[in-house]
Length: 580
Image (cartoon, rainbow, N blue to C red; front, side, top):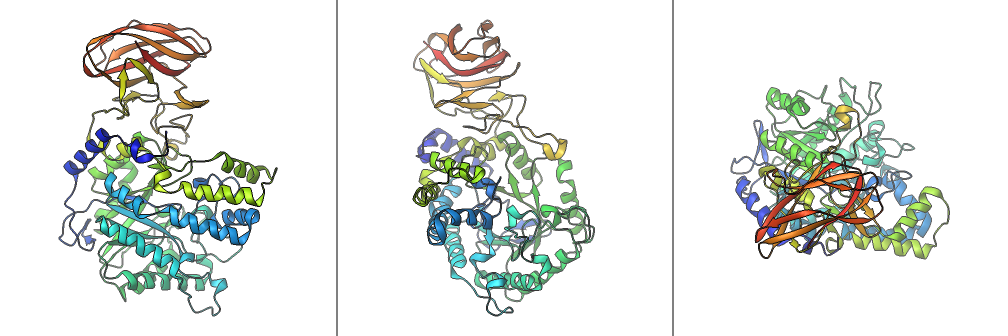
């Protein structure tokens, strides 16, 4: 996959995506988003189903997005590792470039083009105001222009694309949860819940934000605290067994009051404890223009998985919003978004950019030099020079530019087109005669474009971690893909699995078909049409290294043809099909 990512989105896919977005779009007029009973509506009273993307990793770095989680999960730890290598001055240069490239107008233009109508901005308070320990006067707040200017620019880009911007305080003063990776919590300093100064700073922050943006209709809402996870009276350190949540409720009430002193236009979104989902003790609600956020990861996509939130919506006559979700397979994405659509729940998936990943809508290219940095940080052996580390980090910052990303068109397809269509489409143009790469199978749903036995991770529901793509490369479907030298190949094949390809032939004719593979055990394969009609007899694949053998003869019509390769037996690595 090349770095020129826009060329990666073929014209046919773009046109199909545009068609389905137009066919399923809700009326999208301007005006302040607000609560109307159990719905989120715009200024004209029209229902708005938010299709959002969270800009995770930009203002708040999380270790897993940078592949530093094993030794530095929270941002302050990541920054310290960088300082130790290149010094304070060079570190500031890196972060300046990282923030400049992290989100640009081109990113927001692309999100709008792909079908998103909203953006969730995870904010770090320290881009807007000083930490309490750095204030000269403890009761005062020093305001920093950097965060506000970044927000202003983002809001301008969103407005130009008629997209709503939802402001999310992701890292609150002092940190709002024991899960430090999320909130940049430093346990050596007082948390949000242990410091009145931090609480006052947070309240002042939201009043400042509200006063600045009170008249802007493209601010969709204020998501006032992200994923609080703290034990006030319970035994679970992340607050999952809290019954009262009194400090959380009181703080959100105070923030709401401060916002309403200057801004009566914007909707306020609140979150429960236990990463946003424990609302015990939070009710009754205290404002007439609110929504409840919940976060959904690694669980079943059935009504039972959201029933508690549906009950809250009904019982308290308030909208609900899926403020964060993702980090799973394409199958899971399609199912989750379909569930939200069916129940009139807007959503914001997570995140936009991570280094070397398949489950996001983009992937930031990793470099061999960056791998060396990661190895040093992990082992503390072979410390790189300051010059090498600086050059490496600045290249990573450069790789965050949209033009240098790999756009994951299969992920985008699962989030939009597959939600409304059972039809599979070509991943790329496969022309015969020629060699068809095994990994360039059709784009579509499980049981339409492919069948694989492991296709999503439901560990929260069933306690079992599942690698839906065991190689974790190239594509985000259930098909297992590994990298062999410079090639991507299908691997970990199990009996009964199959993959579908759309082939384009310039004329009607017979083709001799061979398979290129690497045998681990004796395998058996055969070809069928998409309707299951068998086209060839079963071919045995002897257990042997890197071999190409004939699997039969088939007749293809002029134009597009759809065939499937069925794996009667495995296990082997499948490289390609060759048509002559």
